[in-house]
Every structure is written in structure tokens, then in C-alpha cells.
Amino acid sequence: METPAPVFIVFIVIAVLFTALSRLSDTDRVKGHIEERGGKLLEKKWTPFGTGWYGDHNRIYTVRYLDRDGNEHQATCKTNILSGVYWTDDEIVRYGESHVTAHSLQEENARLRQEIERLKQGSGEPGEERSGKA
Image 1 (spheres, rainbow, N blue to C red):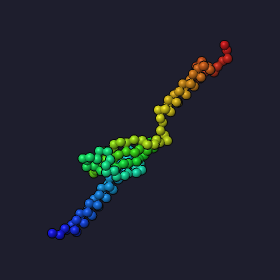
Image 2: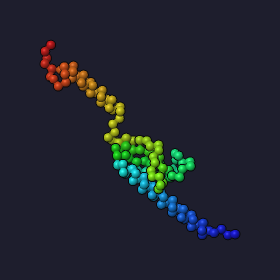
Image 3: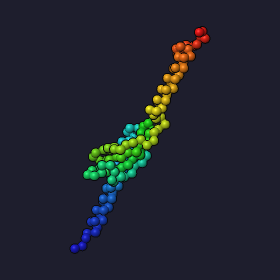
Image 4: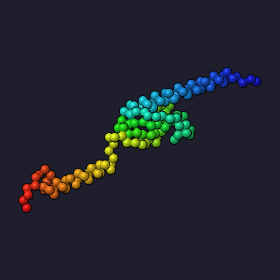
């Protein structure tokens, strides 16, 4: 019995086209999800064995994006046409210029406390000039 080669080739072509269209749709979906929140998609790579791949019908991608504050994230993203976009393992890999760390806030608080103490010692109360009387 002869193998129906033309049917097999048509099946392969349809499968390749379906995969390509699915990935384009995924890109639009992920990009739209990020942009709706004020961010920007930087990179999206298909990761077939990413976090949670076993027994899942979603396609998995490793994504780099900027959030609305300019922080760069690297995350794992699951998506398909029915489930939308689901994020896992999202972490900030580079903070934006406007980022204020807890450490810098502690330093600023310490500097302000020192300034208040200096003013209290120099004039009794902040805003008052020292009279020079003993």
C-alpha cells in the first residue's frame, strides 16, 4: 500500500501555518497586555519547556519588557487564544531612573534628622536665628 504523500505534505503545511499564525497572535496578545498597562515589549522568545509546561495547553514564552516606571522585567508568560495572558516568575532585572530604593530613603531620612539636630543645636528651634546671648 502506498503512503498518501500529498495528504501528508498538506497536513504538514497546515500545521506550520497554524503554528506561525498562533505565534503572531501570541505576540499581539502579550504586547497588547503590556501596553495596556503603560509598558513596552522588548523581547519574546518561545520557551516550550518553561515553568509549568507539563500538562498545559498554553504556549510559554520568556519575555523582557519595560513597565510604566521604566523598570525592565524578565518573566515567563503563558498564553493561548482562550486563556489570555498569565505571568509567572516575573522579576525586575534593571530599575528605571525614577526608582527610589528603600536604602536611599533611609539615607535621606538620616540626612534630614541630622539637619534637624543641627538646626536645633544652632538656634533652639528650626527657623529661629541664634541671638548670641548666653
